[in-house]
Length: 401
Image 1 (cartoon, rainbow, N blue to C red):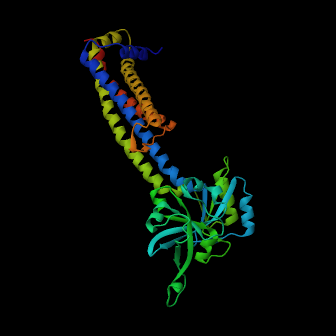
Image 2 (tube, rainbow, N blue to C red):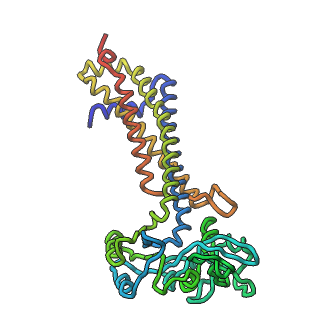
């Protein structure tokens, strides 16, 4: 066994004759334990919030979305349709017509987006799972499915055939306008379902059949604003993207789920980084106690160090004793801290100890990468702290006077 490591282990296990040094050592290890546990708990909490936030928005997000970089819409012909269906890795795709509109009911107006979808849309997303009231659309009917916030704003529910919801968009063109019919394209619809995803989306989309959306926008039968794809489980995303671009042309922009939610990802990643840096600072402060503990131990063991030096141990060997001691303190404290943090997160996940609302527990998620992040942070900071403390040992300190 390495001589310096052997002595370091003995120093870790043995108590000093000075109670103050024992107390400082305990404080140093406790500081590391609490710092590691806190960092892991916070990272797991943010991982839970991230998963919770993206869980709802991703319900209506496809694996890939194709949009044009020129204008708002593009045409897809029968041959392209067949080629897209034949792509290895594409399970299915849906044609979409999306545009900003005004929804009106009983004199009340609300800005929203119409999202016209074809019969494949239910195969692309899990939209059925977020419709607590009513049902999904029947193809080629003047039916809509609205968000909870929109239905509240316009005061309608489901299957009320006496309450018409009018969808309007400005007509393109020039010239003088003499009536509302000249200014607006309008369709009258009936709400048959209400979806509930999150506050933003509940206030944004009105789903309709693609035929209704095309009729409202004066689109051609083959005209779409986007295509949404569901990929097979083992599909190579990059390969599928390249094939789609070959079929649709280079003016097509393809986005995956991460890119569709890039604003949310940036916000969550920024917050996560900020909290990580704050708790890393707490760990740095805790590791100052490790430096102080090792320096106090060096002074306490000065006579022993003189003996080791006279027996042939080099200054480097003696420095390594306290370097290894600091590393051992850091690793032991970090491991115990991770264990405590893991237990706390498991208790929260199993027993809902902390609640955001009476029915919603604070979300947490255990990711393997968080174990790596905490241990890597502890290890790097522990190495630096141990190196600083061990460097206090000089030849003058250990040699016999």
